[in-house]
Every structure is written in structure tokens, then in C-alpha cells.
Amino acid sequence: MNIGIIGTGYVGLVSGVCLSAIGHTVICVDNDKEKVKKLKNGIATIYEPGLQELMTKQIKKKKLLFSDSIKEAAKKSQVIFIAVGTPSKKNGDADLTYVENVARQIAESMDSYKLIVEKSTVPAETGKRIEHTIKLNLPKQARNRSVPFDVASNPEFLREGSAIADFMNPDRVVIGVESKKAEELLKEIYKPLKTKIIVTNMTSAEIIKHASNSFLATKISFANALSQICDRVGADILKVTEGMGYDQRIGSSFLNAGIGFGGSCFPKDVDAFIRLSEKSGYDFHLLKAVRQTNEEQKAAFVRLIEDKLWIVKGKTIGVLGLAFKPNTDDMRNAPSVDIITRLQAEGAKIKAYDPQAMEQAKKVFKDVTFCADAYGVAKSSDCVVVLTEWDEFRKIDFKKLHKVMRQPMIFDGRNLYKNDNLVELGFEYYGIGRGEKS
Ligand code: UGA
Image 1: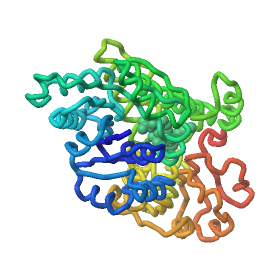
Image 2: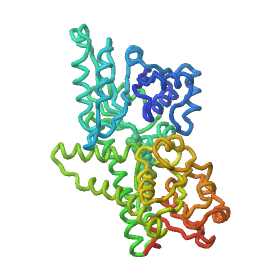
Image 3: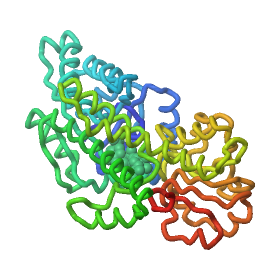
Image 4: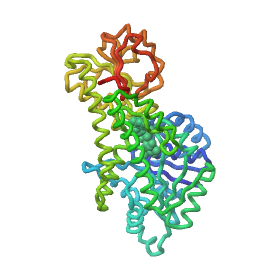
């Protein structure tokens, strides 16, 4: 099938490359001409494991094209996915300006049946608004002929860092449709994946996306709240969540306590879902507590460091990991930003290393010394703080690390060193909720 994807961010680019890999001819569009130039030259504009290779392959096969013209994509494609950004406004609402603009431009280019699919995460009823915008903006000659079109919702559940695998082996595909034709087209698109397809109406599909992210965020905040109790009563969060996770009704994933969730999705989607609920007349207390718990978790970690270091002013703190999670260079809403900024405000000097996110991080932080590896970070540092659980940090030579540090102190914000005997190696070790801080 001929497919257009508008927006080549994380969602758009990964979806475009993968849809082409499962047999479709895809044209990806972005209004950033520089970006399109790079993509046309075969350069992936984001870091995502496996993406560059797959993209190169599909370009060679001529199944993957790039353009800066929505008009071109709309002409060439029967199905057009909208995958542009929906950033948060100051009040937590999703800013849908880009979605509206794209819908208008698609409408202006329509000359035959099109299925327009929202892939960006949007509040409930955005699909209906897109439909209305398209109707209002059809070209005059098309308006008279009433060009047929459908709007559908097809939320994505891709995790950064494993997005290609998530796309190719999804737990489910959700399609929110209002017509049989839209249902058939979307089923046809995803047929090669041989996966469970949940068919619903457009608004339910939109809610499924917000509800899924909010539920996962709730699970994390629950584990983080538990970690606080574990520390106070002398229990070990790792054992507690292991004991809970074997219950199939609970499950063990997304129960890892840490320094709070970040990224471009959970914080934004939780905010947007709270706002949507408010507007619909329901006060989503539960989600407000999830958001608050997440903020408190970062603050509690900073307090722990401040307490154990005793004097923060003038101390050198070595930070391992800056990205909001491993296997990505994404710094959006990374807990590292809050934590480092707070420590700097207390007068700490920060050295940092991240395997992928340093370029992005340089745009975010002031007065941070970036190092080439973990040992560079540890050298002459008064403590090492782990903020992202990169695999590389699991393989650290702790004897070497111990030798170069000024003080052998480790704050493990991701419980990465679960069973390593860091205490025996001479470190003072603090994890999250390990029952050792009281
Ligand atoms: C999330 C969802 O998992 C995807 O299904 C969804 O498609 C995506 O948002 C989106 O809406 O686009 P992502 O933001 O890439 O994906 O990252 P996650 O792996 O879900 O992690 C989110 C945050 O939660 C990270 O900061 C991570 O460190 C944190 N986390 C995750 C925990 O603190 N504990 C856990 O047990 C799991």
C-alpha cells in the first residue's frame, strides 16, 4: 500500500521505516528541510537501535522516500499517518497546533479517497476535530463533489530504545475506526505482523493510549512510593517487587523503583490525561498523586545525596547516565536534568558521561564537565551517582573505579548494582528503597 507519514520524529520515522519494511511504499514528510536533506542522504536523524540499518535497506529497495511536501505525500498515498509532535502547554493541555496545521494541509491536497490516521498521542475526540478541520478545508471543487475520506486513530506503543522490535512484535495493534473501509485498510496494513488487532471507535482508541501510559506511570509511582517505605522500615524494594511481580495479576514489568519516570511521553501524557479528565468534569485524584510521587522521588534522591555527602558545596559529583533511559539519546524530561540542576544549585561541581546522550546533554546543561567514560567521571570525584541504567555501567571495573575516586561513595538511582558486593569492595553504597538509609 502507498502510505504517507507526516512528521519524522521518533514515532514518525520509526513507524515509516517499519511500515516500509513490512512491505509498504512509504513517503515520510517533515517541514524541517535540513532534516529531510539528511534523511534523503540516508542518515537517520535519531538514535534508535537497528533504525539506521533498516532505513538504509529500505531506501535502497526504493520503498522508503522522504519529502518536505505534504501535498506530494497526500497525492501519492492512500493512507496518511499524522505523527507530528503534541507538546505540553503550560497548563498541561496537549498543544495540537501542528496536528491542526497538518490536517488542513492534507485537506487542501485531497483529490480522491484518503484515510487519515492519527498516530500522535492526542486527547480524546481529537480525531473528530481532525475530521471537522478536513471537511472545512477541502478544496472548493472537492467540496462540491464531496471527496470521501475517513479519519482513524492508531495509537503507537513503541518504547524508545526498543522501538523497532516493539513495532515488529507488538502485544497488540489498536485501531479506532468509524467506517468498515477504514477498518479494512488498517487491517491490511498490519496484516504482515500477524498480531492481535483491537478494533474500536476513534475515541476509545485515543483513550486506550492515554490510559495505557498513565497506568504504566502509576505502576512506577507505586513502586517508587513503596521504595520510600522500604527505606524507612528496613525492607528491600527488590525483594518486595519480586514477590509482587510473580502474581500474574500484577506482573513484574514497570515495577522498578528509581528516580522517577521521564521522557517525552509519560510526564506529558499524564498531564494531558489529568487535563482531559478535568475538562470532562472528573477530578483524576489518582493521577495527580502519580505525578506528585514522581516529583518527590527526584527530590528524595537529591536529599539522600545531600545528607550522605554532608557538605555539597565545592564537592565533585560524578554522574553516570544522562538520557531519560538507556539505549536512547533522548534528554526530554530526563530526571538527570532536575537532579543535576538541584545539586549545582547547592554548589556541587558536576562531571558526567553518557554513552549516547552527551551531544543532546550539552544543549541542556551549563557548567558540566563531560568525560569520555565512567572512569573519567569517577576520577577525583567525591561520589558517583548513577542516573541511567546503561548496560555499559553494569560492567564497570569497581576496583579501578575505587582507586581513582576521592571518596568511594556510590548513589545508585536505578538499583543497577543489585547484587554486586560494592560494600565489600570498600564503597559506601546507596540504592533506592534497599532498606539501608534509616
Ligand atoms: C512509553 C511507553 O512505554 C510506550 O508504550 C509508549 O508508546 C511511549 O511511551 C509513547 O507514548 O510514545 P518510553 O517513553 O519510550 O515509552 O519509555 P519507557 O520505557 O516506557 O520508560 C518511561 C520512563 O519510565 C523512563 O524514564 C524509565 O526510566 C521509567 N521507568 C520505566 C521506571 O522508572 N521504572 C520502570 O519500571 C519502567
